[in-house]
Image (cartoon, rainbow, N blue to C red; front, side):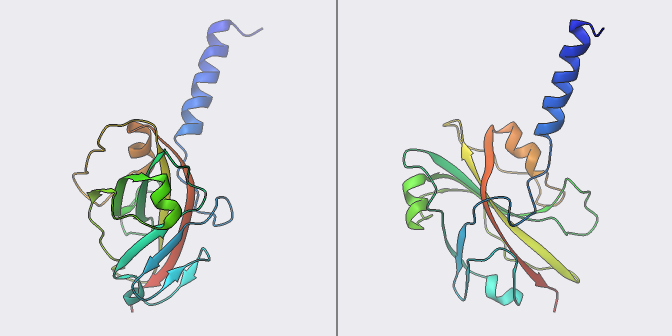
Amino acid sequence: MASAWSVGVFFLLQFVLCNLQAPPQDCSSLPHLLVSFEQTTLTDCGTSGPKSLYTNLKNVKYEGAEAGHTYTLVMVDPDAPNHSASQAWLHWILSKVEGSDLQNGNIENGQLTVAYAPPTPPSGKHRYYFYLYEETQQKELPGVDKRGKFNLQQYADTNQLVGPVAMNMFVTSFD
């Protein structure tokens, strides 16, 4: 028979392991964000195109956002060289985006935490993910010291971000 202590440890480990999972990279697992650039708009997750299409980010729309709630948008490249499975190259963080603004595709009022850096894959094909997290606190999100070897799940957990609640992704290559 298991002691109360061992059962408690089991549930604690299960909670920790479940919460340290990386954000999904399966396009069908979450609702999609509508991500617009100057030259194209991502509607379908997994769109492929030349990197020049993704140079100038214009807006992000998510009709499922709730008015009165605030959200954080993050863009990462998990295919960056010399990164472990839980790490990615950080391209962008925009926080304090109002739900009503997301419904309308207006991200101009959000707080820029890390400036947008367009894709620049050093070789081969890379996937670029946009994730939307719901904020649970009113505090300002901290910036990051470096873009390389960024652990998105750790950042989300540390800042009590819920989600991701929506996503989108595109693929581009070096050439």
